[in-house]
Length: 239
Ligand SMILES: [Zn+2]
Image (cartoon, rainbow, N blue to C red):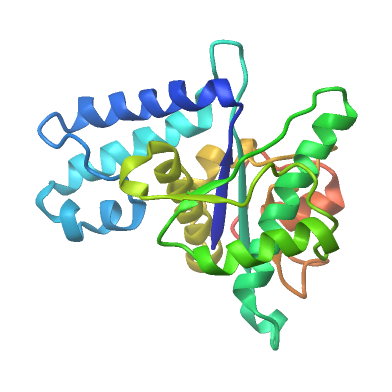
């Protein structure tokens, strides 16, 4: 499961600060504790010492925040996530496929902005514990020879890697990944429902949420269905 949070440069600090203030309000005695949905939900590692009700209340508010926050000028973040059905892609490098897909979809979003007269260059910042070496070699290749979907035009640099502990925005992306994982692996739409309207979308097609599987033409998940109905369901269906 790969994910991303796309923000205008002016919105990075305000969103990070708002996430920080939610964490401080819920857990004033735990400054700097890392938002990491899986251990928050199950009470593992550093979250083991936090009572269940507090962990779940914070997680719920963070998801509501990611589903509703807008910048002072009215911009909303756009989310991206890729869920790969492994059996549909036997013989392919799943990690490479997922990275190629998420970068291409982000680039397509920026190209769409560009065509509407709103041009941006982009910088990708990722968790250093993810697949740094793989991506550092793939991105220059995509920029010159083109990925499966097309050349990546908007990136100004190879992705930069940070320790997720130091970035509330990278932690926000973890929430998007976990909500997507809950939906596709556990058929649990509860968390993705809160953020679903913010996956990149154009013409009713949910481009920002990619379910890579061979049955996509009949798949009833919210993303695959949007390609047929040209509308993103307001209630995320269990499929
Ligand atoms: Zn699907």
